[in-house]
Image (cartoon, rainbow, N blue to C red; front, side, top):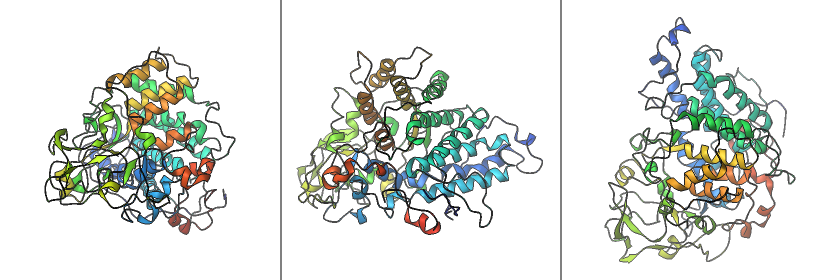
Length: 540
């Protein structure tokens, strides 16, 4: 990478949101300042909008990059509809382009970091306890940047005019994130209620540390080198277990929520599995639009002006262009597994528009029941991934219905949804500890890989194991549990499976089998245009 001094691209666009509730920061704000802020409410007003800079990207483009680059989905087109200059096809084939819309979220995060730095300065600097939550979210934004793009600047202060920065090696970014989280963890609130929902807490910090540590072998070594090994020693496994244990032993989180219901439009702070989630409200059009791209292409109606897949006729059209790969669909076959019901597959039935529950009423399109096939067949195998603009083409591949749409909100608010998106879940902590133990971490609380694994299987009513899972079984379980939650690419890279065969990736783009540079995305063109001394990432 180029180590010359350069200017960072800073977007002028910030995502602002007023939040009415107050965060208990466990400090006496008045003891810190004499003029501003002079109350907890003032601190809340100053800090609230910095927590949501990632909301827009998470609601669509970032998600597209994650699901299409993994084995979860193939982005198909319909005789040109939804090809969108290759935005969905390129990541599906590991032919990432710097101009792909789904890879342009760098500026969302850099803008959020810039706003964090200004707020930290306004509150008196990093030495002030009250800035701890802002530093936590700043570290999280750096984590997403580093995970996606590799070497990125460590932006830890307000830039002076014309100040130059360097892109730091990924290893140094990971180490800085760790140091930040350790420095502020004891100043974070441990409260878990509606007032802290969607904001950084002590538990969010522990979850981020656990995620950082389980990926330490990825972030601190050259993962794009053929000699990198997924089984290499990870010096941070015991630290990861300690972070997981903090959460597990707190007793504040559990798996009591039904798997489907915790992703419904009415989810929120009552979900005990959610450690840190991004809240969305369709009425404010914050941009959560997952269902639009995962339904059936003509699911808005029955083709004759009547009710569609969601129990009513929608005024807004739907896309339906993200088809589950046959390989990933094969994971959802465990007997009794509640997660099997989070896919549209086979013969489709209408859903109740109020309860979101599937009914016994067949979903008909022009008087014929719609049936989705697991396999995806392209009339012509090329990078357009065109399945055809017909009923047969629209029905190629299963679809995800995990984030079930509220059809009334979908119509009223330009296809936006009320579903909050979890970022860190208790279930992830259990499987992360399971993985760390399988990889050689020392457990101190008596938890076993089999016991941790079976906690997940039990709550979704799937068959439990009678022996410790293998790492391959664990990866499969993570696929079932966290699909469409933006962690699958991360998991596949960590397990050394990102180049494996799925969908049409290795058929249309054979070099993808051995091109390890694609484990890191290209720097978006707009960022390079603003930072002309930067070089593009290797392989692009």
